[in-house]
Image 1 (cartoon, rainbow, N blue to C red):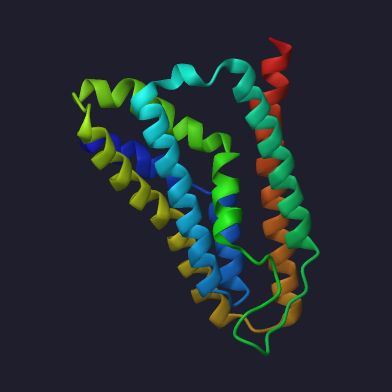
Image 2 (image 1 turned 135 degrees about the vertical axis):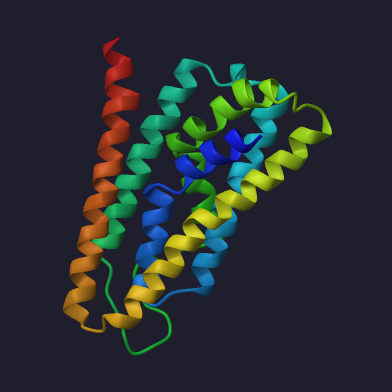
Length: 201
């Protein structure tokens, strides 16, 4: 069972679109609204864990996975555009850069192929190996969803900590552009590995 937590931690806490957006929000002085974004991410993971934990990964055919990957890469590229073009306000407690919400967190994670990379090995290999079934699937799904909340939450805290050390608008602008470029890289990586290569097979 430790293997399940180790795998989930390793895959969820690496830089991804949700984590990068949370860090960007923290850097730009946001905290309360992005917490709901983190809750949205956790709820999306809970829904996916329950869905695939009880029904199996057979529900998502390769065609659907391709569609989800395509939509996810476009959505992440759109968010990168919004982050890059955001205006910064350092005078208030909240900035206008990339406002995050529960709904954006939910949509982001449901369209993020990384979610399926995290979930499928757990529900199809690790759950059966650990003899997790019935009500135990629900308990583990909740536990792993709490872990999923902590991923963007920790990036949000890191961003907030760094944001207090950096107060120049030009620096914030540069950080926003860097975050946008990282998001574009993620979108391109998804499009290449999960769409282009699948279509080329």
